[in-house]
Length: 256
Length: 234
Image (cartoon, rainbow over the protein chains, first blue to last red):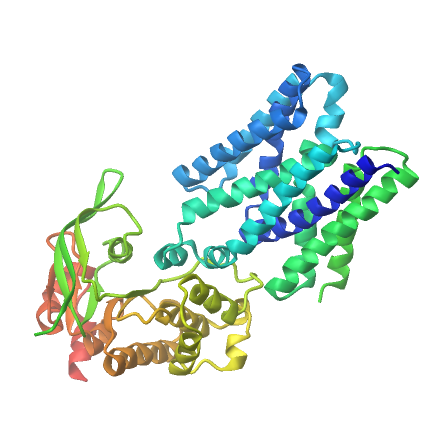
């Protein structure tokens, strides 16, 4: 295994930790559906990037962040718990993305591909993960107050709208880091499923977040091994998701 | 002369084309217990939110510089499954406001919050205990004004009694000014020294015995004033 592969594996591990952290907050904020849709917002950008033969992450990132701002505005202006409007955004991005993405690239756009990673790509991804972790740690108290009650958080002086936007952007950044090897369809799965599993196992907040990160890490490691050693494929996303779903099923059995 | 803590002038709050509050003028002085009464939809909760600048409004709401406001909402749509302990919630507020460590201890001792209570998950608390958490949350930051929005809605009578005793203690012993929304007229009569009545017509304010007349209550709630008379007999 060469250095570029090591970079990719290391970044996948970092992504797993960020996904566990962000997923815990998303689950507690009850914005799992919105989160899932956000990851699909990358698809039209990926399609355009493939068409123009440019870097898919740039295209995916652009529509991801634009779409995130759209979701935020929908939440803020309509006050919806996002259901119907988010459903429309989801269908639109999937439709546009599937239409724009060349057939030969569609599978990779949807399910990702585990490829070598340059040092620059690794450093960029690591910087993004540091930013994600720093946001959650720095905003911990605001997030707790907002989770408990947005009204009370506002009354205490928390700018809830800005906090929500910050979290959505951090969520998008997490999706973007995982987009390369998890794809637009599965990137959010690793954010959501380990957190849902941890919720079955842990009673306290710190315990919950730590368990979510650990399960996410285990899912990535085991999924990677299953893909490369058993299925001999570089499309690792599906295996990672299957492992995390198995862990979730086990958590239901062992629920305390 | 008592200090004026709050002055509200020509307050108007609209939702769409509907005026929820209009031409509202009143003042609150230090040590007051002002009860806000009115039928459902008269804008009581809206008023408390406007007083904290949480919703858009027209007119003037002026708090004096000495006012430090705590808010106890009617209900909190918190996910009772949140893996959040009482102490984690209170500490989050204390850290966010950069409060001294002693303040947490002081509030816990004032409200008799035991270590077991503090380490309980919010999802395991009864309605009355949950309300106590909301009061403790509001008490952090040393407020001298507390806004209560029907603090005992959905509680049994014993829990209601305990919560109101606590509110009364805070007011009488610590000199905290209270602005209280309540449907319970006996509570209003017992604790409030002034009543703000939100009606479809012009809002009115004054001492309970002047405002809570049988005619006014019948106009407000569309029912005979038996309840009021019953209170008067005690």
